[in-house]
Image (cartoon, rainbow, N blue to C red; front, top):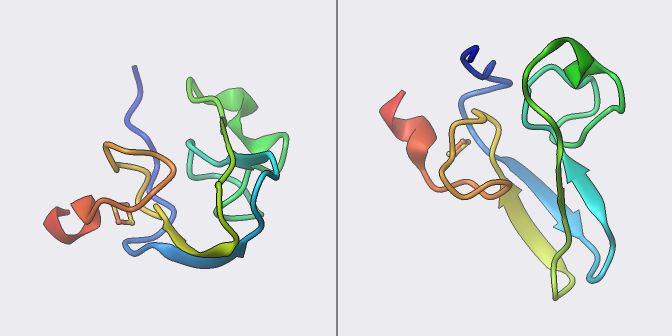
Length: 80
Ligand code: FES
């Protein structure tokens, strides 16, 4: 399996609405980071990750694509 491409070495700070289905970019190639752009992953082994949040608020979504708890940043980027 190919290594996941890194989008950037820090998280994306985003405001999210509760109970809204979103697609997190797992391949790192989307032009709509940190969300899937519906096409860039098609030439990679990765697929987008569907998720939603339970509360409106500010979240930090992984930009390095190496988190062990996608779509959220788990500080793995600090070890890269
Ligand atoms: S940006 Fe990927 S773990 Fe923080």
